[in-house]
Image (cartoon, rainbow, N blue to C red):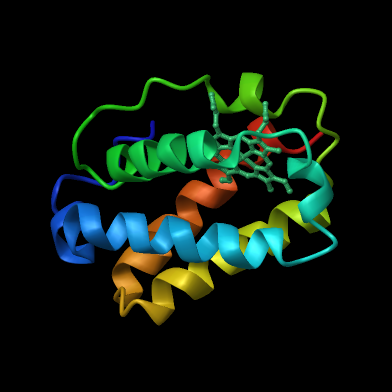
Length: 122
Ligand code: HEM
């Protein structure tokens, strides 16, 4: 399912450096938001960022290197609320838009965000 977006989005977004920049910026805003930072209190954030870079690259059609847990397993028991999920999604879209990602890619990312919500929330 996560491969639906096709192979060219990763190139269009700017490949590895752009994905790393997006993930760095994303966790900067997430960890700076007191509504969200508590979820990450016990998390190895550098490792999480590496996993997120790999996952996002894979979703965008880049290298298929993601070796972390599946989304449901990674978020099980965290009690993530729908509102906090939406907040993280809005931050991700904002970060990507800020990096100059075009509307077609943003629409595709929005689609992925709604399709995986049930695996992350709860
Ligand atoms: C589409 C949305 C999301 C994606 C794609 C995503 C992706 C990921 C990935 C790839 C990991 C690492 C898995 C691993 O290391 O095996 C992870 C872990 C984590 N995520 Fe998310 N995430 C999303 C939404 C959220 C939200 C909304 C929150 C909280 C508000 C959150 C909190 C966490 C935490 C706390 C961990 C680390 C858990 C631990 O330390 O064991 N995630 N996420």
